[in-house]
Length: 278
Image 1 (cartoon, one colour):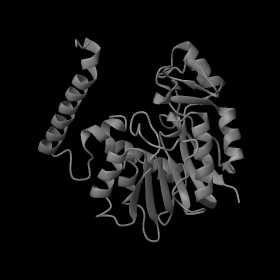
Image 2 (cartoon, rainbow, N blue to C red):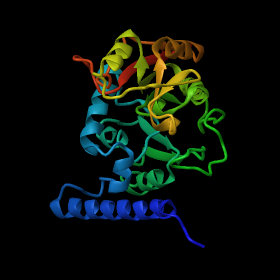
Image 3 (cartoon, rainbow, N blue to C red):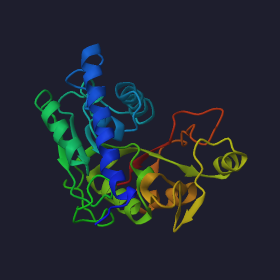
């Protein structure tokens, strides 16, 4: 049987990509830029491929400055990946503070368990066996019905960076409800979004935006029609209503991001801080 050129494309591209990651890992070790607490290049790439440690420090600043993170907080990091937020938090949290990371990427969770938990016993990582087209295609549970594996009111502080920007409406609604459930009354959520409002829509239409969410979907807009979870934007009013329904009350104004070409911005994505209402 003759195979088409396209049938070879995926394994060939995968092999080339893996070889590039191996070379990047080797170069990092030889140059001294990478150490035992730097994830493999393939995991760094899944986090956006930027300066892994610097972005982690930037996110820590958001958690402390905007979210008011305290060193003794019980923290849950939803969509923790390979520990981009966990790593800088190891220098901040003190007993009885603790950290729980949750992610659908089993390889990232395995790396965190092997590299971080032995050094930092208060840092635990849990694999969420949730269906995800890219990282866990055989996951038996949909994100829209997934129950976080934690008791009610288990945490004082929840982190969701670059997570809700990949969730479709039913998934987002459930994750916000679950976040609220596991937060103690008064506990805080720091989350990032791509928010659609008059300013961001105008900047997209003008060509100034780095990202253009041109594809309308049910309850959201998509960056890529053929890859819905690649990046998802929501109307700011809709997010406010979802927060209200989840008993999460915004604390202070939204810190808007640079993604749409704003001349003045706080971070890249839009940052919302909310508190669990008793």
